[in-house]
Image (cartoon, rainbow, N blue to C red; front, side, top):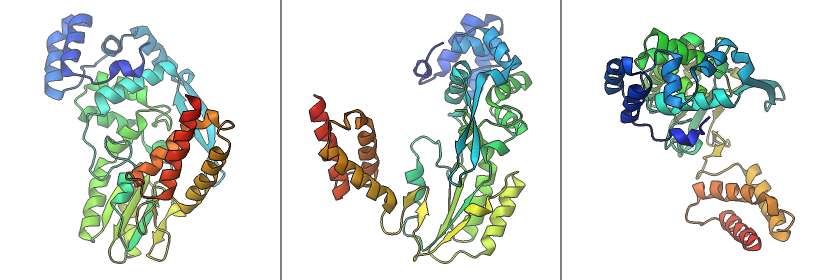
Length: 336
């Protein structure tokens, strides 16, 4: 089965060419669909298999026994409780990647969404709130597990797919009636399903002089003034109308005297990683610098640390960024 890189940069002309090659009897319908929606024409496993380059029988086998094509395992939460992750196995994962790259990624999400959106990140999400006096963070409880199969199917319907196509795409991107936490398609489906709620929350924020952003299941509101405690009940109402529930244990109001943290970034003065992380990095880099041979196999970790620090300090003004750069250079020198 082709790797994901095989499917990069999909083009409408490719979809039309595949239709001519693999289902010529439906060429006119396929061409009209592609020209209208800019997406591949799919009403059956035969169409999807032709685009990906696999056998239709493989898709039918996955549809017949989807549980076999997932690996489920527990992952510890911060509070110590287990969270079940369902990640697709190789064949289904490649199919889901294809659906993500060719169908979902070209769709418009709300501008407030920063998670799993091109050219946005946890950092861009946090930067919106820098300089605010008050911040409210709320979390949606069991976000992906709350996204129903019918909501996913409605997304594919909005993208132009008929009953057969949207039923097929939904079956390949959901499990047991919900979107699996470990599926590559789940975050973008969530963004598209939450789009209406994002709009309502943005309108509420604007009417009350607040900034609003969302990174996956983390919702952040900020203000140069105080945030009324009654705002939380209105936010909860809007989220509830969309079929979701706030996790009250993770709700947090933060003022100027508190450590203001948004998606893991401290934003009180200037954006930075939390102090605990920086202290750990400082000690870790000292150990690596003192014994580079011992840590020779951890170069990728140092590269990651340096890359993360550069996101906050691209001009290397901070000592910790320079330290990471120097340690990495030392490791690379030893490796050459």
